[in-house]
Length: 142
Image 1 (cartoon, rainbow, N blue to C red):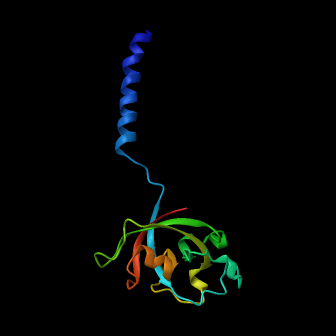
Image 2: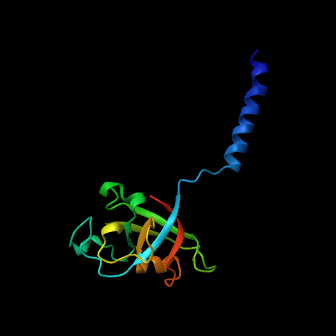
Image 3: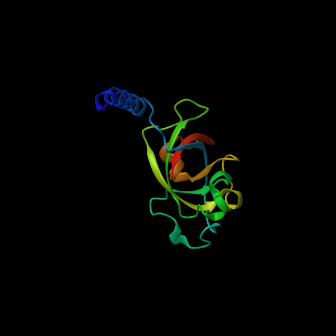
């Protein structure tokens, strides 16, 4: 009896191996990013505290899709530009880490495009895409 179960186990192992090899599950989400300019204060997350901004200026305001009733404040995301309306806009080899410091809907400075998932600071947007673009498609992961 034990010898009869081995072919079944080997078949199961092969199926599992093939599925794991050919289907890489992605933990990232896809959305859009716009950008905004100073003034950045006050913010919905941390008010007038200037120390909320990372020294590299890689920060963002959360769009409604990730705002989560303010729970997104302080969250960090890896963000990468994946496409745009104009070819060559993205710098696809560049992934940045940003910190959420504000809410897009109530930010002092208005975003370059409405309805974006994440509104990046000018510095952050320029790191992943041509800053003249109003918005880009992004892949992001907390």
